[in-house]
Length: 270
Image (cartoon, rainbow, N blue to C red; front, side):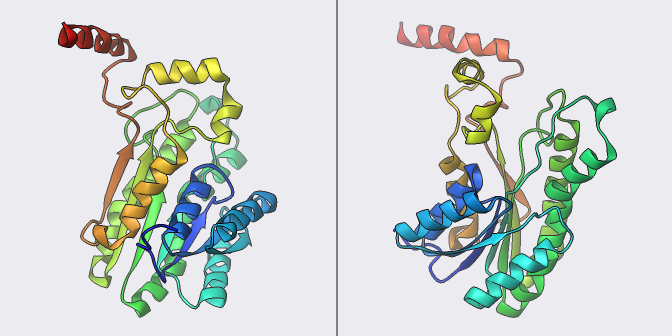
């Protein structure tokens, strides 16, 4: 177990069956939180719960599709039934659809926006009354550098939905500030997850790493630790913000300029 920075807190984590969500769930549990593992895939969710329990933490599984209208109320109801309260809500689940704009269907668009953006409204609305009753709470969201900071062909709906997430964070933070409810997010860059490894091979990953100033992909832990900070008492005066966690990948004007890093290092070593 960690330093118990979330001792006696109850945290909902969506998309907690794998990747970044799994990382957030396990780190939160290690810091004393009771975790509601919300995921669409039961097998993955059970593995996350078992991992937490094996390490001495507490967790309960909620098999749910956050793209469905009633899912948020279902998740919050489970948290209240199991643990009697909810203190932190992390919406991390996401729909990642690729394709040309003219080829997207209405169904694709609805899925992307329902999971990535509409769920922000639903989950927040379900948690807010309980946060107010308890005197405060934390709403946290996994956004992305894609959309708010940079663009990539084939990811228009994903990028648009994540840009909406950032706008939601700012507006909700202002609306809820007097209720002692903070609203923040994290914008991941390239993070090495199972989903990432399915999209490309090791050669593709090495090529991605060549464009990242730190020289490597991030790990789910990198996002989870940032979320932990935002959920902790240390971040009590922070609201309406997103933190970019990308190894500096959004800093260069062009990937070609990354070649200059070696030249600069050579001059420094001379």
